[in-house]
Amino acid sequence: DIQMTQSPSTLSASVGDRVTITCRASQSISSWLAWYQQRPGKAPTLLIHKSSILESGVPARFSGSGSGTEFTLTISSLQPDDFATYYCQQYSSYLWTFGQGTKVEVK
Amino acid sequence: EVQLVESGGGSVQPGGSLILSCAASGFTFNSYAMSWVRQAPGSGLEWVSHIRGSGGDTYYADSVKGRFIISRDTSKNTLYLQTNSLRAEDTAVYYCARGSGETLSGYWGSTTYYHMDVWGKGTTVTVSS
Image (cartoon, rainbow over all chains, first blue to last red):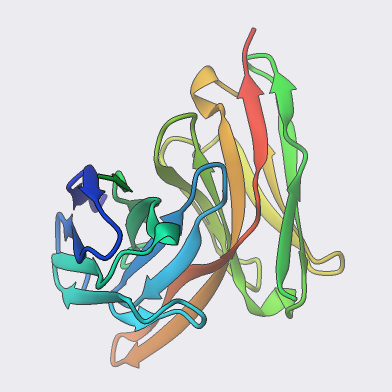
């Protein structure tokens, strides 16, 4: 199975900060990577697919990049709604796997 | 409005069974692959199972293979997950999600890559004696 490792596990930040989350795959997944946001008690929502394609309705402050084994999710200016947990997920193989999650909390 | 609504969760003893359902609306159900993803209390997301739009191909995580069965009824626009031989570690919120695919074709044939673009609110399964 392809292992996905996110860093950091927890990130403390303030409104207006630029935030970057990293996701590494144990083998190349080309650009078949998605990012999801999950607020407490809610279902995940899709932010980005194919590494960098922003889902319709997702604010432009979110961006994704990377290919192969290393990927990043960047929030250019953190907003109050963005305090949540973020997951990367590879869909290169038919055994989809998620990263362990990165919780973005208030500093 | 595109919507997925899960049901069928509950409390069950170890070794028991449950059938989870996911009612889809607002899109052409048989044109999309569907997945189940679960989240144990305080833990991250774990993909469980996937079924193609045609219903012909199914895939399972090793943790549930041989115990869970995914299926779909296109006449009812409903996805199912038959969960058998349940264990304490199957306790989780179970989400269904729509799979949106991109197909690449080459000399080797074609492969479709699915990401999960719409999620339901989830249904809770608790396995305890």
